[in-house]
Structure formats: C-alpha cells, structure tokens
Length: 267
Length: 355
Image (cartoon, rainbow over all chains, first blue to last red; front, side, top):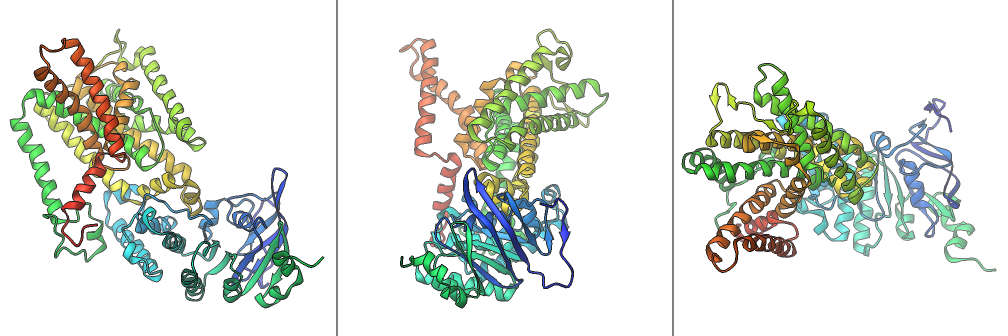
C-alpha cells in the first residue's frame, strides 16, 4: 500500500468511493477476499449477500475501523495511506451500525448534537465562558439539529433519553446523528433490520429523500431484497467474502450466481 | 403542583439552554444562595461552620471532580485523594516559594499541577478500561502518598511531613474565622460548580458522555477519544486538586500526606455513587449524606442508647447502621439521591406535563 496520498488522473469520471482489491482476514479466517467496486457520486449502492458474506467488514474497512491486509480505499480521488475512523469522519463519511450504537444515557437532541462535533469551531473553554461567538455558534448547531429532527419526524422525542425509545425510533435517531455531520457519503449497516413493513417503508423514504435532497451518496447493507431492488441505483453482491455480482438491480436479479447464492442451485 | 410551566415558553435556543428553565427554579436557587451566603454565616454556630458545613462543601467539590471523570466521562478512578494531595501540597509550595502570591492564585496553580498529574495517571485509560483502570489509578494513590512522605522538600522538610495553612486573606480581608473560611469555601465551590455545569452542557460534556456510553461510536463520528479522556482526567483532577487545597487550608489548617489516603478516595467515591453518577446536584446530596448521617446517628445513639450499651459499642453500632443504610439505599435507588430528586420534581410538575 502506498504511504503517500495520491490523487487519480484528473478529468476521469472519478467515483466518490472506489474499493480496490481489498482483502481482510482475522487470524486465519478470511472475511473479505480481493473485493473491488466503485460507487459513483450521488448514487445509492446496496451491498447484499448471505450472512457472513463480509458486508459489515467491508463497511468497517471503508471508514477505518478495520485495516485490510491488502488493497486500498480511494475516496474522493485520494487513496489515504491510513484511514482512521476520525479521519474518515472528517472527510465526510458518516455511518450507522447494525446494532444501534447510540449514546444511551443522552437525550435524542444531545445525540444529534454530538454528531456535529466536527463542525464545532469554538473550543470548550470559550463555550464555558459563554462568549458571544460561541453562543451564536451553538444556536446554529441547534438549528441544524432541529432541521434534522424535523426531517426524520422525531422532534417530539427531542428530550427523551434514547435508551427509552423503541427500537425503530432508535434506528432513526442513529440516522439523525449521522446526518448531523452533513456527510457526503453515508454508510448504513442494515438500517431496516428488525423493522416491520411500515417502518421499512418510512426508512426507505428517508434514505431516498436524503439521497435526493442533500445529494448524499449512500452505501447500504440490507437483507430485504424487495427494498434493495426498489431503492438502489447499483447493487453489489457478496458471498463468502467474494464479489459475485455488481451492476444495476435488474442485472443483478437475473444473475445465475446470485440466484445460486440466495436460493441454492440444482446439482 | 407548584412547578407549573404555564406561560413559560422558550422562544430562543438560548432560553432553552438555561440551566434553570423555570421561573420557580430560578427563584429557588436565588433563595438558596442568599440563605447560604447571608443567613448561614450570621446565624450558624462555629461548630456547624467549621466541623460540618466546610467539609460538606469541600467533599461536594471533590465529588464533583470525580463525577466529571467517572459519572460523565466514564473513566473509573480511585485516585481522588492523590489528586487532592497533589493540589494541596502544590498550593502550599507555591505559597511558600513565590513571594507575594495571592493564596487564591496558589489554589489555582495547585489545581493545575493536579490536572497535570491527572493527565499522567490518565494515560493508562487510553488502553485499559473498567476495573483494570481502577487498579492503575490506585497506583497513583500509593505513589503520591509515598512520594510526599518520602521527599521532605514537598513539606518544606517538616519532620512529620505536615503542611500548614498560609494566612487566609483576600484583598486585605482576613478570612481565618470560621465564617470567613466558610465563605471562602462557599465562593470557590459556587464558581467551580457553575463552571462544571457549563462544561457538561458544552460539546466537551457531550463528548465525555459519548465516550462513556460507546467509545467506538464516538470515534466513528469523529470524537478524538484519547484527547477527550485525558481532558476528563485533567479537569476532574483540577477539581480534586482545588478541593484538596480547601481541605488542607480552609478546613483542617494543617494536614499530612496520610490525610489523603485511600479511605478519602473511597469516601469521595461513595459520595458520587450515593449522590448519583452523572449528576451535578448529586454531589451535594451525596456529600450531605456522608457527612450528616454519621453525625445524626451518633447524636441519636448518644441520646437513645446512653446507659443501655457501652459507649465503645455504640460507635461500632453506628458504623454498622451506616453501612446497612448505604446498602439499603443503593438497593432501593441504584441511581442515587439525584434520581430521587428527579422523581420528586416530576411529581411536582403540573398535570398534564408530568411525565
């Protein structure tokens, strides 16, 4: 892996995110083997595949939670030598987790405000002194947080500790926290897991709205193929850590390898 | 009941951010401060001021320091008394060696030295958590006590390692009377509590709670986890350091390193647990519990059981009773006195705004 950040050739149709030959293993267990795919700016890309296919691991590589043994992640035309979660966040990558990873002791509003921590300019000491600039800045962050709460219809729970909210709403708060960072790339790890049909429809609408209204590029992992085929521009299918299909939803649906992976093949 | 919110709207975010959003709460706090600053020094006896109220205030402050670190930032520590000792001995040395330094400035400098010690002993928190972190802060406790006893320089080569309070005066006003020491302590505690409230409501406070509740998620949204933890150690230890100076100079007058032993750390830890982790008010409630209850028990024991049981046994009985009360209380209310208070407040709100 190169140790210097290097931009790709200018003028090319540069994808926002390119995963290039990523291999990741834990001890002897291979989670992901030589996976490459590209996500164009502004699209909704779904990662699908049976359990254990390596989807979550791949997301964790993209935002620096795991370091791959081989391959590189090119984001916005730059292959960073070393991605850390914080650097990924600074470069505009936000994500949600498969198991809701909220700050349970804090209110919904505080969780969303925490998502804006990278946008905060005034240091803590100036905030404690209550300087005018710091107060005005805090007003701005609050306004933004309120916009997001309104966008996701969770204003009513503003002051509720998130630990007391039902699961479906917690998922929504986690999405709100990710949106608060105003990301360019949003990674969603099973945003609809465990939801009923109505909640899935709501969440799908939110994802489509985020994509359309804010121009946010979305990479999501989802098991509900109906949802995936409806909302995605691009689908990548993994199986046992390898990529078996990559393309528009309609192409992927008819791919014999995908059908085999999902429902088995006649021997 | 009386906590009606009728007609009290927040129309600006600044109004919504206020600590005391309700008019009734603001009136209450003004009345409480007036009582503490005016009525108490006038009418309280010297015994109440110097033996009860001053240690109550100082222990509240030490509790606050530990609560910022443990209750808000989630970093367990048994080094509280060590940080108090560093603060007290550093303040003493600044006072001794810097000519004409106002003693409040030496308190501040003592606090800063304690903050530096906090950062050093907080370094293990970058790699370890929970019980293991407790053990490493325990090392701070033993190391500091040992160093202050071993190296005479810290106590200006006093043969028994005792340090003595500098003359307490601010701008020429002598504060060495019990009422003066009480007012000094109260003023320092008030300022530092206001600062703490503002810290926990700032972005730093939210980052602390984020690291406490889930550090991986905190890192993923861009919070600098290591810096946040070390800042919690620094600020928590600063508070403990100032509390140590007050303990040494406003409460006891003279103190030796063993005055800041592990028992003191445990005492402050109990205050925080009984008061409520992650609550500012809880520190006062917990300190009141720890300071006042033994007194109450000993007075009760002295009057009710005199003649029935030998005096030595009543003292043991008190300790047993005190322990039993703590256990019972923690079973009934594991989140501490502060949660009891929140419950009462919720009941006092007017229906239908009661939650």
